[in-house]
Amino acid sequence: MPVIMFLISIAALKKNTSILRQIRTEANCHVVLALKGFSCWKAFPFIREDLDGCCASGIWEAQLARDYFQKHIITYSPAYQDEDIDALCAFTDHLDFNSLSQWFRYREKMMAHPRFQSGELQCGLRINPQCSTGKTAMYDPCVAGSRLGITADQLLDADLTGISGLHFHTLCEQGADDLETTMHAVHEKFGHWLETPSIRYLNMGGGHWITKPDYDRQRLINLVKKTQERYQLDVWLEPGEAVAIHSGVLRAEVLDVFESAGHRLVILDISATAHMPDVIEMPYRPELFLVDHEIAADANSPQPAVILEGEHYHHATESGEWIYRLGAPTCLSGDVIGDYAFHRPLRVGDQLVFDDMAHYTMVKTTTFNGVKHPSIALQHEDGKIEVIREFSYADFRDRLS
Image 1 (cartoon, rainbow, N blue to C red):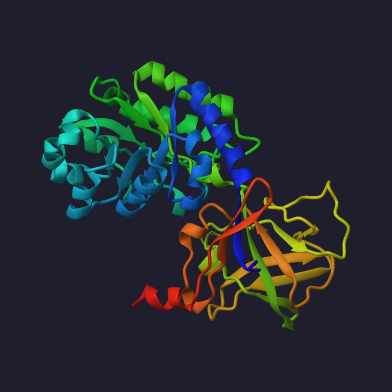
Image 2 (image 1 turned 90 degrees about the vertical axis):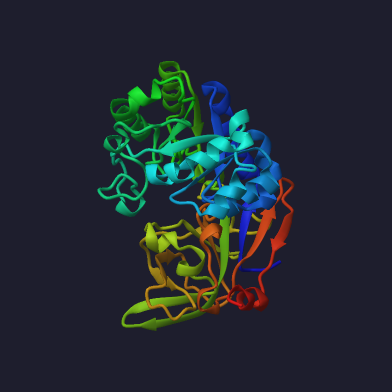
C-alpha cells in the first residue's frame, strides 16, 4: 500500500450523508452534493441514495454528475461558452446564470429548447444579497465589486420571462445563524420576486456546515420550512464540505530532518501548495497525527478520521518540546504547512497523518514542481483499503502535452 495517499472513509461519508438525508426528510427540501468540494466519483455509489443529485460549476462537473451520480443536476457558472450551453441543455435540470447579460444572451435559445418547453430544464439567476457574514474576503461573494451574482438594483425593471428560480451562495463553512441573517437580507431585497408565481425554486447554495457536531440543524430545518411556507417554492441546498468533512486523511512521510537559524525543519513528501492549497489560501491549520508504534494506543486521545488497524497515533499540538516546521519538497519557499509539536524527535521515515483532507483538497491538487501526486484510496466499512488511483510520471508528462 502506498505511504503517500489520500484515504477516504466510506463509513464516515455515509455518516455525514445520513445526517443530510434526515435534513431532507424533516425540512422537505432537496440536498445535492457540491462537486467543487468533493468529486471522488468512485465514492458516489455509497452516498447516492442519501442525496438528490449534484451541483456543478461548469460543463465538466456536470458531465461527471451525469455519468456517475445519475440524479438531479444543478449547473451554475459565472459565464458560459456557446458550446457549453448547447451541451448542458441536453441533460442538466437547473441551469443558473450569473448575470442578466448572460441570461439575455442565451434566453431565446433556452426557451426554444424542447427540454425547457417540457419543464425538464428550468433556468435561474444567481443573486447577491450584499450581506457579508464570513471572515475571509477571498471566500465572500458579497464583497463590494463582487463578480458573483446580481444585486437587487440590477433586477429593477428587468424582464424575467423564462426564469423560474433564484440562487444565492454566500456562506463558507458557516452555521445556520449566518444563513438566517442572509435570508433576512434576501427577504428584504428579493422577496417581491420570490412571491411571483413564476419563481418555483430557491437555491440557498453551499457553505453550510450541517454535519459539524455543533451545527444547529433544527434552526436550519425551521428556516427552510418557514421560507417554503412564505413563498410556496422548493428549497435546494448545495453543501460540499458537509458531505465529506472529517471523512478523509492525507498520509505523508518524513524525508529529511535538520536545523537552520534556530528552527527544526522537516521536509515531507507532500506539498501544501500542490496537495492541500487551502492551508495557504484559507488559511487554516489541519489536525496532525504521528503514527508511532512505540506508544500505547489511548482510546481517549484525539484520532484521525481514518484509523488503520495496528497503528497508534500521537496528536501533534501547537506547543511542546519538539517543535518542527513542516515543509514540502518544492522550490517554493513559502510551501510550508506549519509548526507542530511532537512528543519525541521526528526521524526520517516517520509517517504523518493530516486529518480532514477529503473536501476541497483532491479537487485542487496539482503536479507543481513535478512533486509526486498522492494516491487515492477508499477505506470500506469492513476496514479494507482499496487503492482507486495511483499517479505516475506519465500523468505529469501528459498534462501539458
